[in-house]
Length: 184
Image 1 (tube, rainbow, N blue to C red):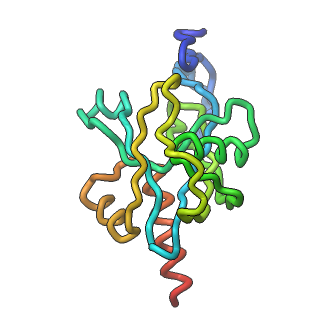
Image 2: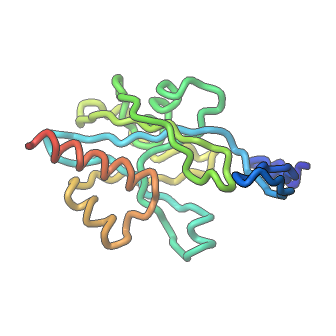
């Protein structure tokens, strides 16, 4: 049953689940579907900085009064191939045109209630790859600040709660682990 169908689709489902004991249990759950997405962490090895964005997110504001989140650039696939869609999002949000992206993995971020999975990428950037100022698309309600953060500072920002977006934390921690293991 469709409960809402606006920016995304909220549906209600009744189903029978066979438990490990062999018994059947009738369950009712809701699922929110807004499509799948992609995200990317860009790293500049010459400056040891990561490229992040800061923007208002209504759900974070409603749940905790947070007026802006620091995040990795991301966007919905809208039926497009993930790497190509991510390149478009990077130009729109950050202003950087990145030719090579490395696919890392795909993850469900909140599988208990949201159908979306994210395709995770990483890439490198330098100032000569800046194609525009970025900032997002006005028609999509975006007002995005682009920030260059030293990797060590970004890790501190996770610890002190300034960065509390799951996809961003995952990508930053993965980069730090990569750097530590290649230094050994």
